[in-house]
Length: 115
Image (cartoon, rainbow, N blue to C red; front, top):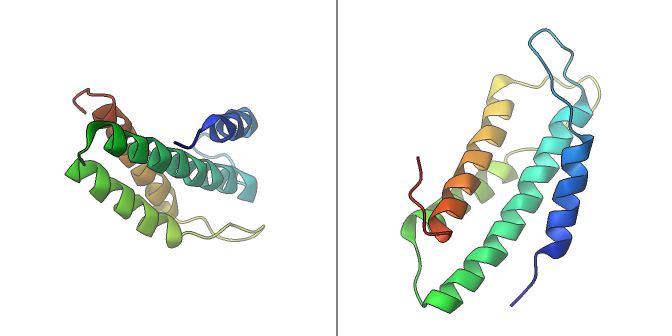
């Protein structure tokens, strides 16, 4: 059983680095890259939690397996943004899709229905 303590520490640090960007604000490379890194670490932590769940309960949850695979493929399509790069709406949406999938997985692993 692997622990996710270091993942949680990294996620907390990244949350502290995040800033709210409103409509009309300039989106900096660090804004997108911080969320991208957050998604990647959160997905790694989720995979550890899910492996522990499968061992403990001796079963899989199909939608969780699917959401993890989908999130992995979506994140592979993303690259870090450099100064001057255009951040398209689809890039933002990929990150939101991954965060929503992680939320659904955590709710299902925790035994709660997802919204």
